[in-house]
Image (cartoon, rainbow over all chains, first blue to last red; front, side, top):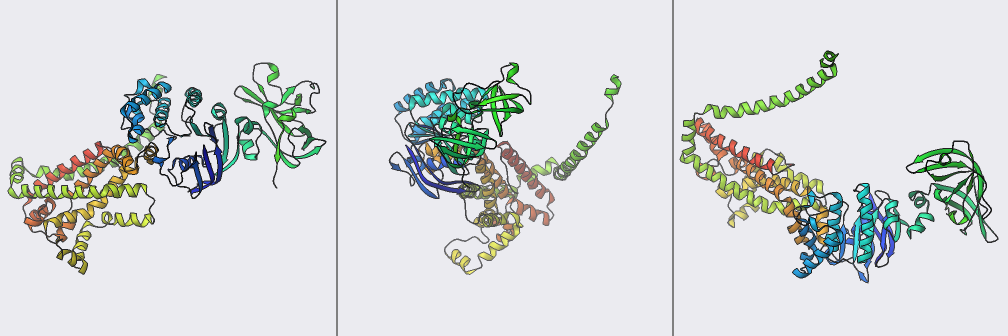
Amino acid sequence: MIRSQGLSKSLGEFRLADVSVEIPAKEYFVLIGPTGAGKTIFLECIAGLIEPDRGEIWLGDRHVNRLPPEERNVGYVPQDYALFNHMSVRENIRFGLRARRALPSTIREKEEQLTELLGISHLLHRRPHTLSGGEKQRVALARALATDPEVLLLDEPLSALDENTREMLCRELTRIHEQLQTTTVHVSHNFDETLAVATSVGVINRGEILQVGTPEEVFRFPKDRFVAEFVRSRNVLEGEARLEDGRCSVQLGGARLTSDCLVEGNVYVTIRPEAIRLGDTAADGEHPNVLKGQVTRVERRGVLVEITVEVGVPLVAVRLADGQPSSIPSLGTELYLSVPPRSVNLFPRVK
Amino acid sequence: MAREEALISPARVYDLTFRWAFAGCLFLLLLLTTAVLASDALYLTWREFLVGLLRKETLWAVELSLITSTVTAALAVLVGIPAAYALSRFRLPGSLLLDTILDLPIVLPPAIMGISLLVFFYMPYGKWLEARGLEFVYTRQGIVLAQFVVAAPFCVRALKAAFDNIDPRLEGVARTLGCSRVRAFWKVTLPLAKSGLIAGAIMTWARAVGEFGPILFFVGTEPTKAGVMPIRIFLDMSIGQVESALTMVLIMLAIGTLALLAFKKLGGRGYLW
């Protein structure tokens, strides 16, 4: 378990402001946020490489604020991997075990286990600077895992890799985590990556943790405007919610929607574009949220087409660009929008 | 049609003119240095050079130069490695002031450091040190001290450049892997900075070999005490022994060239001269 309590640190333009999170043991926690949000500082505070200005850090039942990094038992893989170029891959992997004066038999065993797990047995005699990005990452992981750390800290482990390598390593990180069950904090700015690996997510911006939850929760039910925009909800609107006999009805612009969220007053409304069903006719009445409007914008986004429909308020929906003529409607087309009430996410708007 | 393509376009002419004009300035400078230094070699016949080289005084000056500057460089590196590391890694208060003080001996005319040393040992605290056996004025250990005051700050600068090139995160990772601060420095940073440090040490040594001003003022010109090569060259020139002076000039030229080549081969960077 990792617990930070009121963790604060100012470091030039980067900062952490009163960060309190609890990451249960064996969790794969992804801390996601834009560049400069304070993600690396958070990792380095846990690793003991940066001393916080205020706040407490707990690893399990150990209060580690006063412990130097070498006594914290954390594995740290910085963004550029920080491999030791003056040593072979084997020496890199053995480095931590030797520093901790492990028995030669333990060293050999551990090395074998990890090189096999990561598929790098054939690289042992190489120098790190001759490796590809993906290989470097694996070696860095093996080195960090060799000492059986209580906590594994990964700083943007996938961002410097090409698309294919990234996908492969993503799967591998999940596999390694399933096998070793090491509590992991993985820092990222990419939500696709996060959805692929995380069992739990924290969104950070300007040094503040804005929301913590399962990837699903954070993705579908953001509780903060920044989070909503960061996870690309696309439809982030202001509205006014009222409770009427147990149901919540929200007015946004000229449209009225029913929501499963039970909030009242000034709210933000977020609807994921993929939750909106588009049709040429009004669908059957399984829920009241069916709106009619005209297409005002159509934009290709990779395999998706983003379609904006004006229904008293512009709402963005997506369709697969599957080659069917209907997937790319022309401007001005009349379409029906249908949004299930559980997909209409609301949270209070302060001020 | 093909002929038209073969014509040089005006843009190409501008481009070539630009390159030749700028590179021309570079060649001019190189020519200046080469011509001036080559004159030293051209002035001497082989015979004069060999005679000059084998003179007792010359050999003695070479020996004294090599010994004193090696001792100086060794001391400078010994103090310089920790100092450079501290300067590169620690967040020190008043770092602007620290930097300025450190660089002063490099920027000031070297003779000023010699004069200042002389004054220092004239002051009560200097006299106090001297009375306790730390005698430097007009002595051979004075040569080392005079070289040291100028070469050591230079050394710190050169070594700092080596440490600046090593990502501090490497040490951070080493520590999370179980290294103490000392072990992380010893096992990671020092080996990685090795060639940069050697490069810095070589330049420090070369700088010490070339030191003249401080020795002139602090140790004097008495050949048996102060007779390092630069002093010897000065003395020989002033009494008209041009051949002997130029022989040593050529030796120093060789040392300087070799030191620079080694420095660049080792990837040394960021030094102040």
